[in-house]
Amino acid sequence: MLILELSATVLGLLQGLLVLLNKRSNWIFYIAQMICLISFSLLNRLFGDAVNNSIYLVMGIAGFIMWKRGVTRQITVCSTKERLFYIGFIGLGTLIVSLVLRLTADPLPLTDAFTTVSSLTATYYMVRRKTDTWLIWFVNDIFYVFQYGKLENPAYSLMALNVIWTVMAIVSYWNWNKILKGYGE
Image (tube, rainbow, N blue to C red; front, side, top):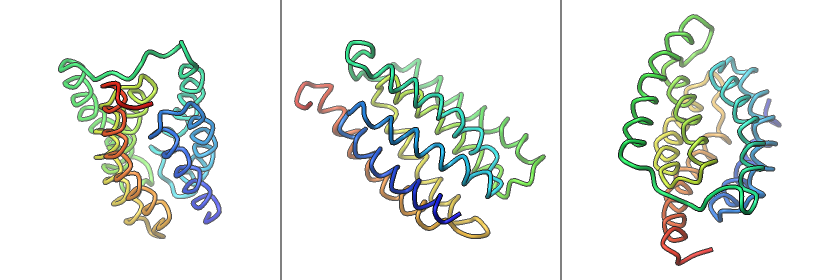
């Protein structure tokens, strides 16, 4: 299990750096990381995360394809309507998924539900290159630090990765806004 945790951590750091720089190659590391995280999640009975990471695997492939030059539009900002939608989606989705996860052996159904739904939402907006992805990731990564620390066998490498990702979400938000305004890239 440690090898999966460490592999996911290293791949996640590489992916995080590349996406911060708005590089298409980030999706290659993302896909490899999802394969490690699916296995890790199943071994730790984090069933919401296992399903979520399986969906990410597909979204990673879609992201790689969509980020090809000319296919995906440039970085944009969510409208107020989009923001209200994703906040409502995360809230309602967390409630529904947590009720389902309570029927399983999931040790942290509410946290697992929140990280599952908010990660899915953040990934969707990352594929679409919306700056709001980094606001969602910021909150999500804080919850992941808590979740990995509360496991029966805490996943310290993944906790550290999510602390780093919390900082990277701030830097990525700043960098993508800089690119959006024409000062970067």
